[in-house]
Image (cartoon, rainbow, N blue to C red):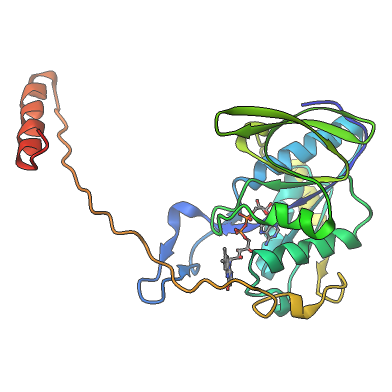
Length: 271
Ligand SMILES: Cc1cc2nc3c(=O)[nH]c(=O)nc-3n(C[C@H](O)[C@H](O)[C@H](O)COP(=O)(O)OP(=O)(O)OC[C@H]3O[C@@H](n4cnc5c(N)ncnc54)[C@H](O)[C@@H]3O)c2cc1C
């Protein structure tokens, strides 16, 4: 990680259901959230780590923000336990049902009411909504440059950062002016675990809850009313393929297992 000058860094994070336990309601097609543990979006942990490391190297500050139900305060405290300096939560009925447009508007308004920041660090995407639109959306609302899929910050100085960005067939090195928005990928950092001291600090931290009025947001641009997109149907793909697993228990059974696979493939007309 590059050593940089002091920066005010804002890290938007989202609380998501722990993906391995997610179930879809077969009748309504919506995600069953009851009884499912909520965690920090795993890809946001990399943004948190990059932010903490940058702030530590230059004497800057990290502020973590989230928009979600009151329970999302837990995610803010977990980020503080990891080492973020402070956090705040956007919560209220007016935010409910926001699509990526309204979510990024709300987060951008919150960032605009905080002390001026140099860098906004987002995760690559959220593991539930999975659009990867919110980071670039924040940049658009704040009229800031954005670099997506950032895998490393190479150097900085004079109000600029040089970053490495992953693309399909390699990587690009880009220079970007501050303030800017970066969305980071897993390769950018190794997220640390919270320490006992961090947990104590997180427990004692004051986490303000902001309403639309607090961030000067137009209520008509939030929630379902302010969302130009709607999820009209959610379907789980039916898995048409099937297979057969032959597990030989000892080397003597390998031949029989291979013959079993051949017979199975012949039956399916695959040989
Ligand atoms: C077409 C469409 C319609 C939708 N309609 C509805 C709807 O009617 N009702 C409804 O409840 N939901 C709806 N959603 C889901 C909702 O838009 C998303 O949950 C939310 O806007 C965030 O988008 P995402 O999960 O794709 O985040 P991404 O864009 O994948 O997230 C990227 C990064 O942005 C940041 N981020 C994202 N969300 C937040 C947040 N809330 N707080 C802080 N940081 C955040 C994180 O850093 C994250 O890593 C809809 C989504 C789509 C695509």
